[in-house]
Amino acid sequence: MQSAYLPFLILLAFVLANAVGFVVLSHFAGPRRPTAEKGTPYESGMPPLGSGHERFSVKFYLVAMLFILFDIETVFLIPWGAIFVGTGGPSMGFLLVEMLIFVGVLLVGYIYVWKRGAFEWD
Image (cartoon, rainbow, N blue to C red; front, side, top):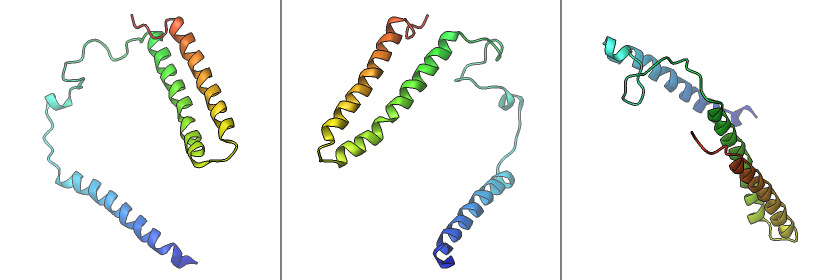
C-alpha cells in the first residue's frame, strides 16, 4: 500500500528541494547593487504622479464587480458544454433550453447595466 505513494513522495521531495534550492541559490549568487534609482516606484515607465492613496471613483469598482460577476457566470458554461457534448440522449434538448434561459438571464442583466450607463467611463 505504501509503495504506491513512493513515486509521489519522491517527486514531492524533488520539487521542494528544487524550489528551496533555487531561492537560496538566487539569494547568494544574485548581484546586489542597490541604488536610489532602483528603489523608486515604477509605474509603466513614467514617474508616479500624486499620492498612492487617492480615492477611486465608485464607477471603477462597479465595472470591476460587473466584470467579476459576468466572468464567474460564464464559467458555468464550461461544465454545461462538457455535458452537452458528451450526451447524445433525450436530455440534450432540455440542456439546450436550460442554457438558453441562463444566457437569456445574462443578456437581460447585461442590457440592464448597459441602459443604466454603468459601462460609460467619464
